[in-house]
Image (cartoon, rainbow, N blue to C red):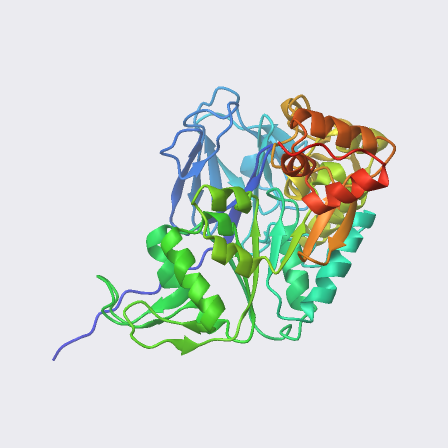
Length: 467
């Protein structure tokens, strides 16, 4: 008689750890039975790249519960106890006031909602699934629109959504490209079909083609079974390719064939399969420059940029900072079961004066951290932890100051331009800086050359000689 011995399925994780630094947040799943090192060193399972964190700072012990041990770190670890969590006798010294420094080399039991604070870094224990994954998770696909130019941009993409025109979204990281892509899908006839989001920079080249196009059995070492690619599985839906500027050139050629032939050929296959998908792409790169440099195919660029929309950075739409901050605060409190604190005037002043190099994503991160630090039902200025060094730096060179926009029907490009009392002076300065070269001046201003020429005529400025 023979017996089949099978391993029990791995226990599902009950908890996750959300780490908030000044620049971002990151979620770590806490698998049962795991012992996770926390620190600045590359060898840590929970690596925190912040100077206030020791190389080997703390350790997490995960069973049905989660314990933490400070490893004698230089700056220590503060525990801010979730006031709604049940108290344990062993924790009385630490929790009697709701906060306290962890003793070195002793294990302390954590409860969901507890916050570990290492200088400006926050680590929050929560039940698995509470943290959302999208870069604009707080908006849940519904944008907060106050800035008039953002309203125009969304009105444009909603109109374009009813067609199958390919949409290219341009803008800095964290500015809101994913939410706009979701809007295109939601207002399209494909709204009830799949919506695929894929970050082209997140997958290694060796996996990207297999994931996108699928493969047949035996197509390569390890391909033991055939696999349907993501494009096939999104048939009749919308495909959002983020960071398309990072797409390898070989994959660019295959994607071009999909756009031209509306068919996908799996790796190792000889016959293509028809697919019906609508493409929305996004990048924070200057694709035209990459085309000139031979890094991006010109024919693919023209295929994906049927309509190009540039999303302004958050610093160019200051009227949206407070509404977005309140929106993120409300959503986070609803998700975490916390009482929504007030945002005090000093905190709002700090938010308004920041340049937001990380854009909307950074604002969300700041508001979630501030909520965790707030006490007595109020977010004060010192709870708004900002990267002050960023305010002393010039804006990223890829940014475009957008205060007005127009739609160039000939090139199907949504062109932001500069409007206001100093618009004329800024155009003159840009032309002077570029030696009168209109193409370079338009790029510096973040507008199309045609828009620049229209402005020159509007302000009765002489057109410089070609250079």
